[in-house]
Length: 616
Image 1 (tube, rainbow, N blue to C red):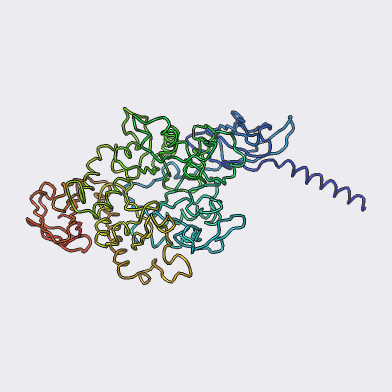
Image 2: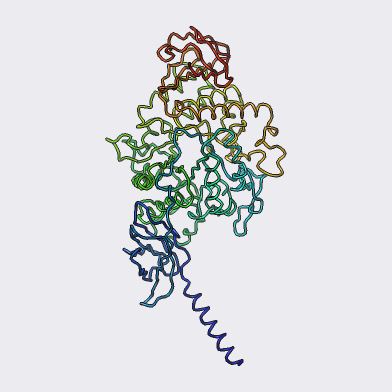
């Protein structure tokens, strides 16, 4: 009896260790896909010890292996799959054989698309976006602050360390966002950034398919998006194709030498996006811009490598389909290979016609910014297929406009000059506009903490063309200068942590001027939400004179007159000049104070003020 038990035990050990040695697959990305996609081609990356020596087979007509591709590292196998248009959801066995002997299998899952995938509505001009950084917004789950194996530990006293904000903290405060009048939330990157330090910002990805454990999980992210939708909030996912983190798992074993741009010594980009369209730019400058590294910890990805290109395209589609997001903000859009970016956008637009992407186009001139929008300058370049761009020229003008004395091209004239160049854009409405963001000084600091200037800027932001974006904390006058470091301008939102003495998420936790600011922006955003003329109506403006600026937003049913006084004194404005826009209106409603104002030959404004008038 003992001998029989011993034999059974030995057989068990043999089976155990034999099975363990056959478990050669460490990763398959993407780990699953969907049936019913517009594009039925899929390329999966299989990673495992010497996997390139194995032959993969599928014995099912719903899923066909078209080709197997080997690169320089023997530990990668790229498998081209063709999904039958009539394929059904389920798990399909992929067998891996070596020397005609079956060694292991991977069961690849095809899921059913959700019913609204094709018609999913992206963000658009009716939206107002809130940008938040999860690590600095709110900590809803202190249990995930520090994770074993992730060296960048929480330290709220260090502005450049992690502070512990997470997905649970965002979910906890969604009512605050919707109550403010917002309709969309852009969350800076949530994907894993397992870097030794300075990882809180999220722009050094170490796993493209995994939410950072200190924020939560993939499922928590998916649930957050569902909750946002219930609250009337769309979600914009922040993605990065230009680079990854130096601690990304593949950096220790690159699929091929040209997977990233490599140099004998560290070579930093020149950050000169203008070289892309400059007809006189040197090849040296262009290559330094696009191929050199963004930072020492951010290897530059080579999108001209077709396998990496497929990987990135499929990764973005996977997140759209898995999570239900409504848009993508693509970081450092000009830095990636532009032919690749055009191909990526074409694929996204074909798969999700109503979905939208905004590219971070951080350039100083209107013509350079417009270059990246779809159908711009077709005689000079291939189309980019990118619908929305970020309007940094307007952001710069918005800062200067209220800080300068008015002149021929200074002060309020700066706003006029930016909009006067909208002929450069195929669609100037498809611009994301903002006073500040996570990369520049906070707006309140840039205007020397002047509340009246802040109100004029917020009024302009919510009534001019484009999609307004509000950086977290702008609504409560948070300050911070770029020259103090990024960590300072990305300070914690007060009240997001249990031990915070002040809770600005509540009326009681805000001081008087913070409540004035919150209430003012709330009125602007709430009014904008329900009035189409402020989303996509026509715009007519009149050149600023004597420190005043008038413009109109209108459609067939609505007509709004916005009047700005940038002077340090009260002014009375003659209205004859604006008769073509005022038309037959005899009264106006001040939308902030809900006060009726008779329209005669003049209108009077107090110093440093703005009126938004609904003409009747």
